[in-house]
Image (cartoon, rainbow, N blue to C red):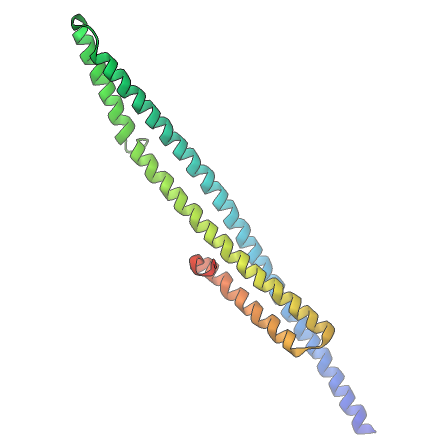
Length: 187
């Protein structure tokens, strides 16, 4: 009878220790989930900011295109001025040509510079979207790991603990990839 009581005490101690380890695993998974949610929030903010900025730059590009086309039309009208105003027409033509060149080629605000800037912003937006998807995937794996590990406490199933741990590991790998190589983790 003493042996049975001793075995029961050992089994109870092991179960209690197992619950502590499971609780610790749940805490680690929850901390990883918080990290992933924060990373996803930052990525979403960057994605929104870049999308708005790119749209603003493309709007400025469109305005420059409109102004350049209007200036070209005005230059054609100036060419039709009567011969006695030829000096005025030549001055207008020169001014319009300079304006057209500035709209097209100004290194800071010309159409090409604006298009390049907008494309860079779009690349930043796309990279942030990939990072957001990577962190969302990591968060999903961690959430499922927490669910399985919590269920293992109720059922006492070691398989659920291992399943939760594996999903947590997968979530951790996806989170690290979200930082280092988001394109890979954005499934």
